[in-house]
Image (cartoon, rainbow, N blue to C red; front, side, top):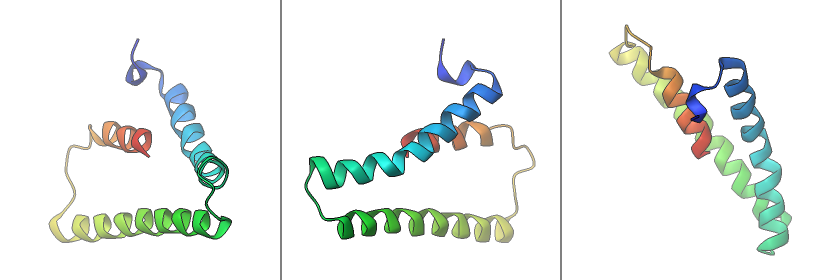
Length: 86
């Protein structure tokens, strides 16, 4: 059974849990396994956060400029795929 066929609350929990587990995992991986400094790990996470917020800002701008889709049935798929790729 595929991940996208789970009930909504289970899929939402999975995506939220994996999204919030990314930050501690990547910080531990960068500092422990790869041996980078805490400053470098912080910069990487800050760049990730700023780019994520910037993409939302740009998406909102284009949504306001060109209009939003009338049929938003596929937004859930794009949100879940982007969260899994994060």
